[in-house]
Length: 231
Image (tube, rainbow, N blue to C red; front, side, top):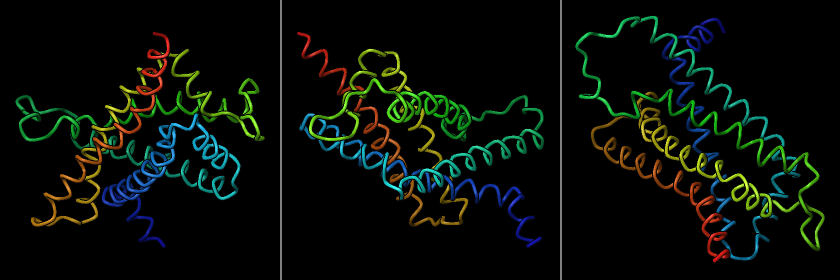
């Protein structure tokens, strides 16, 4: 047990933990996006509301939420520890270093991108999870006993348009975060091969574009539909 804890708290162990929690959060993004795409079915939110009701009432989702929160906290904690370690080992930057010459912007600014996404996540949880769960102003879907998340989505993005803009900006930063994190996680776990690494890089870039774009499509769709109906 002692060797396990030493390995876990070592720099390598922290990087492995960072990679594993990163893969876990990537899988969550894929599942979450799949559910959110129901918003575009054109059925006045029927499928989307059914999905939101299931996600807010099913016991298995309650367990998954606890695991998800722990995964987020562990990912953030390991990122902080690794940042502290890097600052201690390199307290002063080289006077003539050219980091832009041998690294991408996303790799040099993972902390900035992650911080923007975290800030957005707090507001996102308040606007949708907290208000859906605890505020009584949300109407009930006709013919059902559950709240109208479709109404809430439209209300937030239209009345609080600044959040819609923040949502889109945050997805850009999420894309940068994923672009480097996807490939880096594979390398940390030793899944690096001259034959397969180029494919992994391409998949990482594709994932970093498609997933954030899918999420950003929501406020764009809602605002676009609202402006169209106002004409």
